Image 1 (cartoon, rainbow, N blue to C red):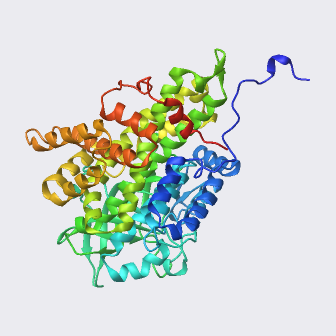
Image 2 (image 1 turned 90 degrees about the vertical axis):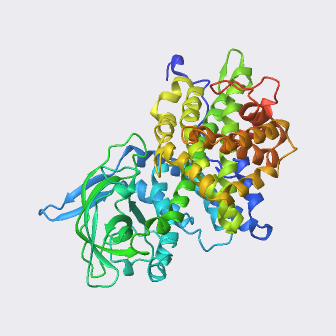
Length: 544
């Protein structure tokens, strides 16, 4: 019989056996808002099935296994032949396969395709974010390939397939395929125009031979890659297949895998091209036009990924505090802890609401919505991804010492939290892109102001914030040095406008008072005590 000193008390039960989608009220309401009524039952059914899988003990265990068993590089076989393969734990393949079969690469031609995929991406990120990288790049490759109708006809059916085939085989023998990307080089980083990878035209029309290297090549186990290289006509986008049509391996020399802070289940490699066969995508020297929609798609996925991480961190914190007792009552009922949880919940809901609004703009596809995306995506990517890390750390602290232990899952969220701020252009890149949209595309600002203007008159703090934003936009002096502040204000005002229109009054009131009205400190947990914080926390509780 166990000693009475070993009796476990006052520990919360694991947060398992619940529907990750339905338990997220902000997400479920956003889906209901942006999906046509006639399609809503179908979409909710899909997301409920995925949400139940994501909340199951089995799938959560797969996520932990994938993180604990990072990929391994195998450059040669036992006989010394070069193979350049990456080996993954079985849990990785199970998770990636489930993501593919759930439509996370199949948004482009489905009704409400971007909203239903965005919601699914946000849900699936909460299991293990590493598998979302190849899902994101495969999804984003489609608009780039569409600049070449012949390539799109060949590859798009495979990229949007719901069939996952892990083996490397000639593309025409596969029912489904995944894509990676290789843009940055050692000397350039985000300045992709500084790349030195050379592309030499071959006799075959559109075919080239690549020589060079890529400093970061994401998901190197993929079937194909979009890469940038210097062609005679300038920087150009190319498709590099992993296996050639005759079954031979393309020259794709994996030098090493990166040892990363987070995102450890996903492989990121340095790769050398040495006479590598490639097919041109789009025209020579027009890489910006070719990849612009691809970049927008991956940036939106950064917003979605961060929103998913935030939601899981908040769910874990509220769940823990709802069961844990201290000083004569539940932690969730203590005024100061309630303030912290409510503040975290506001940040999470604002991120989710904004991300789904941008996904809906992708579905609409109209001129005004595309103009809104041009300014709102980099602003959201800048702000939401930067809010992820401090939120994850604070949520971890809500669990006390338990949140610092790997078994809780919180350290994995903390390690993952900075990634989306870095990937696809770090903060300065996004802020400067906001400036470019403001100065070169006047329609973008008009679309933004029309969007936030829909909420004017509903909250005096929002109205004041909009006026201050006008003042900042009118001041052209030192604009580049103020770019971060401007991107932040654009994102916050847009979040406030959306919450005023669509969130419960208690949520909108708390957000506007703190983020727009100045009644807020420098850390989470500094909301005005007069707000209805209990209602905000209860809304964020992952009931199951």
